Image 1 (tube, one colour):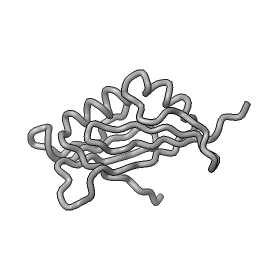
Image 2 (cartoon, one colour; image 1 turned 45 degrees about the horizontal axis):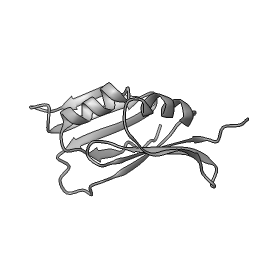
Image 3 (cartoon, helix red, strand yellow; image 1 turned 135 degrees about the vertical axis):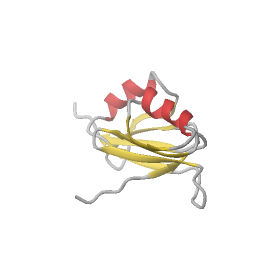
Length: 118
């Protein structure tokens, strides 16, 4: 199986853990940190996997990751009660239903799913 696992920069692994695990419902797949604030944190939600890196030296900042999901409305309902949404749920002209939010380090999390059929 081939796949891509995005690596997002974060200022503090403890803050990122609170956001992704406690608020969005991801689980920790691995952690490599001596102090809980710097190092690497692997997270997963179903088949979605990401790695958080603090401090992510030598790479770009303010990244964006697109997460393709089966039901954007479900995630919007769940997550909008837990975190601030950057851009509300909408149907895109290009055929997806999307919304996005920012994590505590300024990375954009862009969710996209199929347009709901009525």
